[in-house]
Every structure is written in C-alpha cells, then in structure tokens.
Length: 156
Picture 1 (cartoon, rainbow, N blue to C red):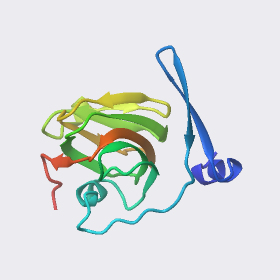
Picture 2: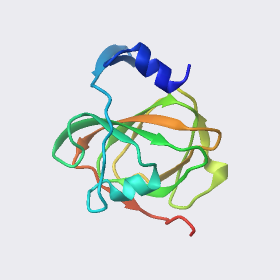
Picture 3: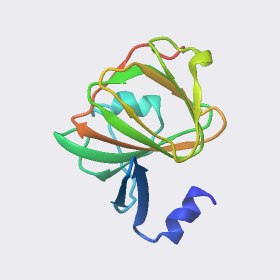
Picture 4: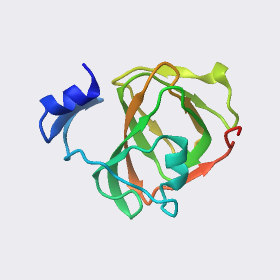
C-alpha cells in the first residue's frame, strides 16, 4: 500500500507500535503536516543531505528536549558520511535503507535495512546511507538540539 493511502486510511492520526526488547511501546504519531526550513536553520545541512520533506511529530529538534520526526529520502539519494552530536534511534517505515559505518563512502560496508528495522546511532558515530532501490521514510527520535556534522561532502 502506498504511503499516502496509509495516511488517508489512518485519518489525521497514525498509531505505530514498536516492539523494543520485551517492551511494547505504543506511540501516537501526531498530525502529519508539512514543515519548511530556511537556509539559516539548524536543519539546512541535513535537509541538503536528505530531501525537502521533514515532519516534526513531537518536540523541536532545534531546542533542548526529546523530539520525534520523519524524513523522506528520495530514490537514489546518497547520504554522505556524517555524524550527529546526540544519540538517536531510527525506524525504517517505508523502503529499504542501505546503511554503513565509517568516515568514507564505501559501498562494500552497506547493509540493507528493510521496513520495520529499528537501530540506534551513538553520538559522533560516522555513518552513511543510500536509498538505492526506492524512496525511504525514516522516523528519528533523539534529544535536541540536534547537530549534523558532514565528514565527506558529496561530489559536485
């Protein structure tokens, strides 16, 4: 089922159930809405790495405190090596994300993470990713303010 149909079927609110270890945590995901960023925002570097679509579901990643957001990675997008100052968790909601660790882009280090994959990124852990086969939608949770440091810039 396409993502847009799932949203319509869920109405204004979507409920996600995540199973982490033995804990069954139900999260009510807030009203989906478009979010816009300007070039001077804390999201500018990340938005250039990902896509123009980012949805804040809870909190504000630019301010102290917990946040939950969703981001869409367009098909073919390579997210070059970078790291974040804070620990965060990631859930793959749609598509397959190819994810690798290291300070240099290396396709041999990529692992396919299908929908439903849950993982954490420790602070300052260099990583990279690729939406190789199709669009990917991620749900990110962390404690702000979030900072992204690019290690290897994309080739022009």
